Image 1 (cartoon, helix red, strand yellow):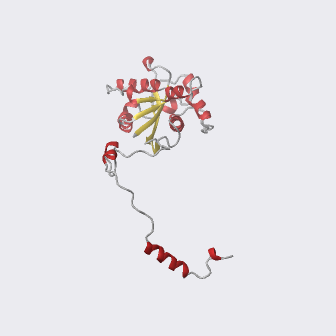
Image 2: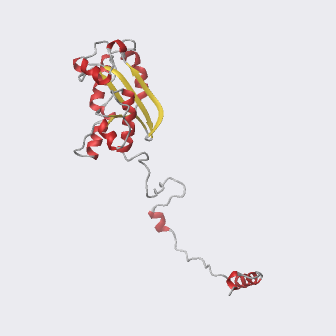
Image 3: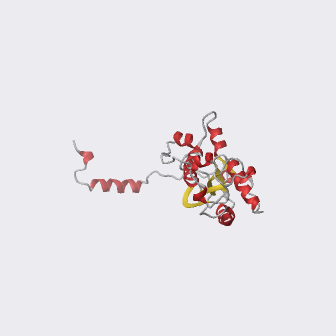
Length: 230
């Protein structure tokens, strides 16, 4: 099972009023295990950077002007995402921005059904508790001391660790009970098959007279056995 933990940084809160993506970071998981594959890009938003957004992520218009626009990166980003489940903290926000960028390019949007929202996951698991990424890092004792500013790849990496804890820890599929083999697997037996097997009498396991005699002869050959002491 392939999943992509994804985060974006933007110029603001609403793409419908002209806000754009300025950074995207992705971490690949296979069967809930990080593979080491990542995708990370700074993106030229082709507009100014509001002070409020700059104070969140520290990315200035001057810095971003040296990087490609979203259109130049779209193919690479979409190929990396593929049809994987997108694990996103507050998924509606990031999906709204990604799809706004795709609409500008007349590209098909990514369906919301492809996203898994870790905010909703955390709220279901811990009702009433804080569900921010920082709060969840504290809950699971995940070190985020190096996170002085938001960064897409850094946040995606932290979210990957948080997500694995939310779904049950580093080995979420580890079952304490043994799994039953499927009916298609070699050697499997259904209840119907077990009931249909004929009854067989237990095999006799008591030693024969010859075996007992051979055992006595062997014991007599042992010099000074410990069981004869005293």
